[in-house]
Amino acid sequence: MLIKADESKHLNLSINQIERLCPVAKALSSPMRVRMIALLSTRSMNVNELAEALSLPVSTAALNVRQLEEAGLIQTEIQPGIRGAMKLCSRQTDSVSIRLMPETENGVNALTLHLPIGSYSSAEDIRPDCGLVSEHAWIGESDLPGTFYHPDRLRAQMLWFQSGILEYRFSLGEVSPDQVEWLEFSMEISSNAPMYREDFKSDISASVNETKLGTWVSPGDYGGRRGRLNPSWWSETCSQFGLLKTWRVDSKGCTLDGQPLSSVCLSDLHLSERDYISLRIGIEKDADHVGGMNLFGEKFGDYAQGIVVRIGYAQPE
Image 1 (cartoon, rainbow, N blue to C red):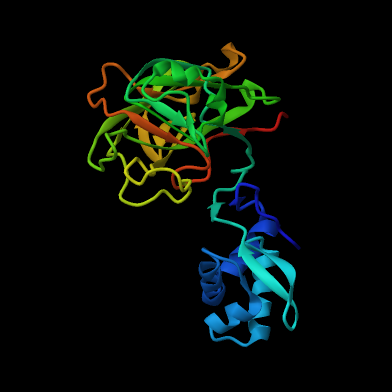
Image 2 (cartoon, rainbow, N blue to C red):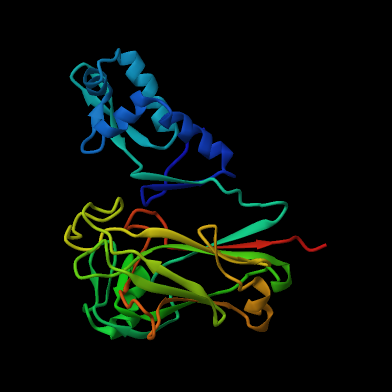
């Protein structure tokens, strides 16, 4: 089966996608094929060139190329050559993310929503330094809080501020609030220091429906190497990547990356009292560490995602 990677060149898979996942896993299980991908990281090569670079018979190289192509990790194009047609190979996928948690847990279905980081409904008390960038350029004017309401903010792939709160609103769709068993959301975040500084604490708080889930103390603002997904124009002296953090609320309480965070449970969120769920994330005015926040989208940082919301729900009887 031929598998095509996403147009963004980042392949996101879950353990539920067995027919897609297995060919990719098989293709990456061979050190030889991994070395081929590495060779194609900077330029295209034909099968003969790959065979020569890896000291392989051409027939062996061609077989491995075919497996990488079928997995959607490289693409090939037939071009005329001096001695007939040749297959030119180029890398099609920049990164692969695999979620090992099933989309259903103990018979509970899961609804997954992908929120662009610029799709917030409000940006309250934003303080400089602050700004937004898209995949290709800056959005509006830096260090101007009003830029957070720029019409192009929906294109944001990275944003930052020293203090303030962003609110995201989303609906349950056709899922009834009474069916919800758990709520989970994840994002790539970090502190926001001048340039970057890995020892720079910041108290980043999250709340749902105006109920505070708890505060994560971000250790720092990360740089020193490029974020895996950052575009080439982004300066190496700026923040590069964050940490992927996952909050989860169920009937027993709230966890952060699987560790207990607070006693807030699902019933405290009063999901049935409004037509949407409000997710608020940011730096509160009275925080002990006001170290800012960087929020990364699917084309910045290390993880090919914006804000991912997962809602576990039981089927109606």
